[in-house]
Length: 232
Image (cartoon, rainbow, N blue to C red):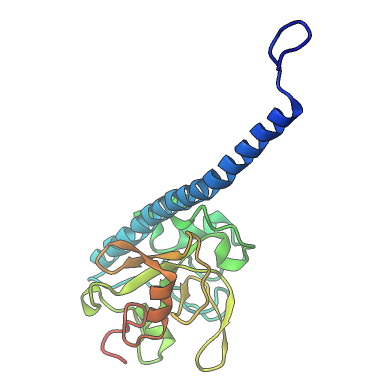
């Protein structure tokens, strides 16, 4: 169509058609962009977990191959040992709490403790970490185990860290437990990277597993998650 002065112009129908085409293209591109963003955040998250697991292994090397304490108990009442994440008691969950943990001297970066896809409402230790240590390191609080296990007591694919939330959960014994610096395999998790979870294993690698596989491991005993050495 042309204007009265002879210059070309769009009709209303043509403008509507262009808007419809743009809307269709956006609807096709947005899911792909979201998947690309999730993938990028997942890769970044895996890199940060790699820093943590390598710091853990360096700590073990300096302590006769013994893993750090996992902050399994209450941050303010029961804990007596300096854990990987903090030294109890902790009443202020600010970033400086990380610097009291046994891994800080090996990690030395606040970013290594956080996943940029961790956006849920945060309380307690979730303010300073997006990752929790597997309570299997100390046999989930078994009174017969008074210190963490050594590296060589675990199978190569034993999970040491994974992504989870700081939530109150009900254990198999029926008691309520708070996930502070550590967690147990039955705790609910929220996948942050599509339908998958990052897991750091004892050999120093970080692997990405689907939710289906993670949920299968939650009931597999012994397995990747339920990996207390020499115990079923």
